[in-house]
Image 1 (spheres, rainbow, N blue to C red):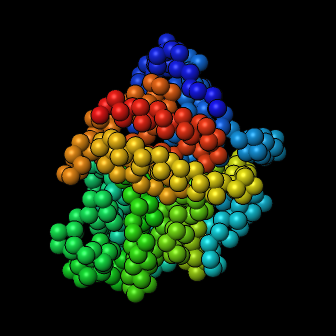
Image 2 (tube, rainbow, N blue to C red):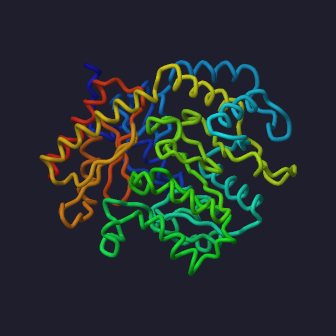
Image 3 (cartoon, rainbow, N blue to C red):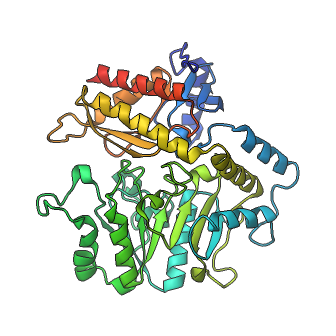
Length: 439
C-alpha cells in the first residue's frame, strides 16, 4: 500500500498559523479554501510546514497533471536555468519557444499559429483579440456557468459565480451568455422533454434570431467540460451543433482547455471526445506543470500579420517553455492518457457504488481523471447541499486529503494522472468516510 497521510498535528499547526496570520495581514483577499500551508511536495503528496502530509486531489487546480516536482520536469528547468532565463521572446527569438509552438500547433488539425502568454486568462485575452482582429466583429457568445478568467476581457465571458462579477461592472461589452448543457439540471426539460439538445439549438433559433445579430459575433467561447461551473459534461451532440452553428454564421469556435486539457480527460484535449475541431484553443495550467505559461493556438489564417497588434514581455519565458516540453514528454513517455482513462473509470465506479448507499451523492460525472460529485439534500428536488459539501471537504483535509469545490455543491477530484493506485483508493476512502459522517 502507498503511504497513508499523516496528519499528526491538527491543521493548522503552530507554524501554519503564523504564515496564515502574515498572509491575512499583507496579502490581498483571494480564494483560500483550506488552511494548508504547503512547504514541499513529491508526486501526489504534499507536506505542510508542521510536518503533516496530504494526498493531493487538487493538483494545484488541475496544474500538476504529471505530479509535483516530476524529476524529468525538474531537470529540464534546472538545465535551462543555467543557460538563459529571459531575452524578450516577443522581440527576439528563442528555439525553445519555436519548438514548443510547433508541438502545440501539431496537436490540432490544419495549419496553426501559437501565441504564448503567462496564464489561462491571458490565453483567453489573446483569443478575444485574435477573433476580433480576424473577423472585424465585436460581439461574443459564452455560457452560463463558464469560467474563462478574471482579467476584464476574460471576466466578461465568465459567468460562474456573482462574486466574480461583483463591483467590476462594466466589463468588456458585447458578450451574451446562454445556458450550458447541464443535463443533471436541464433548464429546458419541461418545455422540451425529448431534448434534441435544445440547449444548443436555442442559440441559433432564439438568441441569434432575436437578440444577437450573427454577423456581429466574432467568437463563441466554450469549455468542452465546464470546470469552475461544476465539472459539467455536455451530451456528445452539443459541441457538434455548436460547430455547425459557427460554420453557418462565420463565427470562430473557441475551445477553452485551460483546465480540461493536457491529458486530464484521457485525451490530449477534451474536445477530442466529441470529434470537433476548434478554430481557437486556449491552454495553460498543466501546460507548465506549475510554471506560469499560457498558449493560444489558432488557425494560421487568423494570425494578426501586423507586428505590434498583440505582444507581451514574459509570455513563453524560457523556464516555462522547458517545463512545458518536459511535461509533454512525460505525458507521452508514461502513457498518461491511457492511465487517465483507466484510473478515471475506477474513480467513477467506486463513487457510483457509494452513491447507492449515500443519497447525499446526487450525481457522479467525469471524463478521464477530471471527475466530480454533486451533493444534494433531496435526491428528487436536487437541492444544493452547500453546507454539507463544505463539511465533507473540511473533514477530508483534516484526515489528509486536499479537495476543491466546484459549482454550487460539487467536489472535484483531480489528482495527478500518475498517482499510484493505492493512493488513489486511499483518497476515495477518505471522501466516502467523510460523506458517511455528514449524511
